[in-house]
Image 1: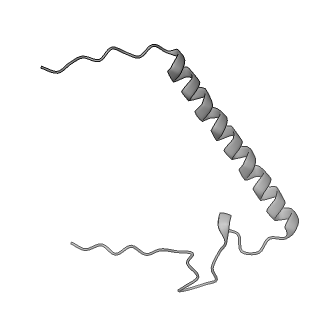
Image 2: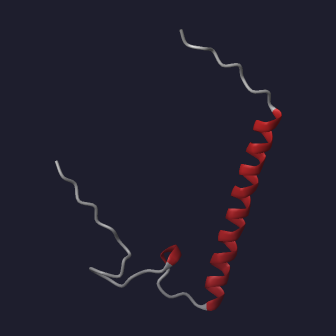
Length: 68
């Protein structure tokens, strides 16, 4: 069975192409607001990853059981 994948947002097909964040045409202030929110989200995700790495390094590694 063959499946065909259809990609959206390439600028071809129906409707106008959309830029990043699904935005069509925002003014400068709207772009700035969206990008600042996105940056805060990325900073939070980075902090979460750093916290997970720190916890994994602090916890002793569980002992592995060899399979027979």
